[in-house]
Image (cartoon, rainbow, N blue to C red; front, side, top):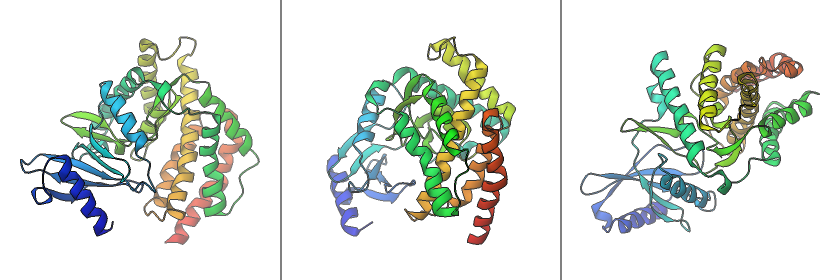
Amino acid sequence: MSSYRINALTTWAAQQNGLSKADISLSSAVGDASFRRYFRLTLPDGSTQVLMDAPPEQEDSQSFVSIAKRWHSAGLPVPQVHAANLAEGFLLLDDLGNTPLQDLFTDDATTQAYHSQALMLIAKLQNRANSALLPAYDTALLARELDLFPQWCLSTWLAIPPPESWQAVREQLIQHALAQPVVSVHRDFDAMNLMVHQQRLYMIDFQDAVAGPLSYDLISLLRGRYCRFTGEQFASFVDEFYHQARRDGRLSSSVDSALFLTQCHAMAAQRSLKVLGIFCRLTLRDQKSGYLERLPHFLDHLEDSLLALPEQAAFAHWVNTTLRPAIIQRLAEAH
């Protein structure tokens, strides 16, 4: 980040608080996979705020600001936007501390308890946030996401073709997603995007929210970066979510628990394939580090869900006998 931009950011932050640059101090805060950077602003009274630097030529912060204001007004736990300069890409936000949810995954009991708490947050999001104001997670978007897998993982990184079953798999996963009720979807409801502040979970990084499948955020949580649940644990969480959604009216009685579990496994397969493609793209196109070594974890997620989808047996066999060895070999060569 240039000294000019740091100076401009500091000057703007001071002005928003009615202070001079000499009255405040900045320190780096946690970043993410985008081009955004975060700084902690300390005010003379010791209170803090977070400054988001999102260069407008690389990041469009309008959706973040709009969604944050709507969700905050709906009583959802998100950082309040105190000021925004979209032309410069500067945002002034609540400081939610330094504890993303995964830092509290210290043992099985605690991990499961926090996941149950996060399930309730998903329910609040789906019950309170108006999905009609969000872009549609439609056939075109689902297809573009799935296509990241053959484009970036198979072709660009591994230099292998997709299997003959790919087009059928792609179509079936899209249909499973579209068959579900449409709700507000955070779209990256992973533990890293849930901050624990004053014993409450807060959502961050929701700028890509869409109107989409009921199970998507559930899957982002259960098939995320930090945990691999057993089939029994996964099914138990899904059942907990299912019954809450039935009680809330988010899910019709025409959908039984077995069908919803199948839809969740299909959603998990879709998201795992997307992540395999995105992590390769982050590495190869965006020159980000630390993503390729996470591929085996999401490959495990993919295989776990494919095992629960009998119609995907041929694709599951290809994943196990062709894709997994290719990824392991490629990672070994990189070291």
